[in-house]
Image 1 (spheres, helix red, strand yellow):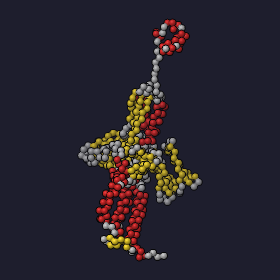
Image 2 (cartoon, chains in turn orange, blue):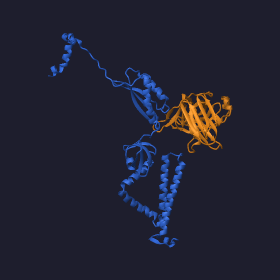
Image 3 (tube, helix red, strand yellow):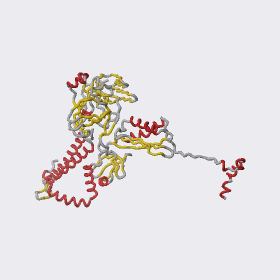
Length: 246
Length: 301
């Protein structure tokens, strides 16, 4: 389903139906997912529709820009070491319209097939509401349904001299960089700075030798997603400072 | 008609720095007016520029300081034009301030409270608060007063001194908030099953937080029912819609699964003490009825 579509078009996959048809001088966007129906009228010479994965913090309502991934089992890492592993993350699908001159991009719709749940990171006074996802820890990339889950390559670095037990990681959507092709991919890092503080962030995708050996699929160059958050504000930090433990 | 230029050179009064002409007064008013106009334009531009980039509350505070600060600085720096020495003005201002302070204690009190409110920030623009019995959204925090839009759309102006010295309940002061409600089920219903049903329902609600975890438990065994208490945490922005939705949804899911909310009831056991009825009455029921009918006459007479 991901990709560029010229108008008019209609596509159906996994219970999602998206179409764009001309009605007199307007375009009618129609999306159906279960009982959820969205219809929008569009004036203007739309040229393309782009459907791609976006940051998973927009639905059902944009109340936070943070994603908390909880590990299904706590992970122990020795002090001063660095390890790479894989997680999954939820996917939201964004539909964008591009005008005739390819100049301006407008978000039309966001929806998801993934389970949506929120949680609080930190204490009631001063904590941060996050979208929550539970993931297994994989030493090789899993093969989830790319319409529902993506693969996150995580580099975990323990800069302390002590063993650390990690059961969750929180990420800011402002730093997310998504890539897609046959799968959806993000490359993240988490640096443990002390007993209960850490910093998380994202990196641009480039294919390393290690990754190529671990993950043959990654030899294919993926397309870069059009994101929602990194087009928004300039003054927001891209990294997330985990002050309330991990 | 050409204005008389000499008119602007006409001396109105003389100070230690020299004569003050009508032209000086005109210049002073012009500079002050221009500075007000320019700072208003810049404030408007900055407000538009920072609209989506900084929180409204922080932006408004900075803009107010900028606006009034600019005017005060221009005012003081142009006092020379009308022959007032700013240092002398400050001294005079101090004395005047004391006099005015005594004369207008409430206004000064409100002003100072307003400054403290902006610095301490117990409330922000957009917060839902309860102050002195008034509940609603804070629409503006001004130098002298705070404006609140009540839930039914009324505008209430509360002097800042009252805001600052009252107990303020900020309903959105923390990112999450808990709600609680109770529902009764019949004594014959399985409470464990009811709890599982409610847990599943809550789990399907995106905004019912996983942490802090919801709790559902039997709180009381009443005469007519077993009372279940349901406690759920939600993001403050979703607290009210979620509560409204879940109270009814819980009742529905329980009833769909055969668990009913009972009416108040009392079990009355009726005993027929047949042994105590005399033989003659047992054999003659009409006489028994007659005896009952005449009970008041016989006993209460």
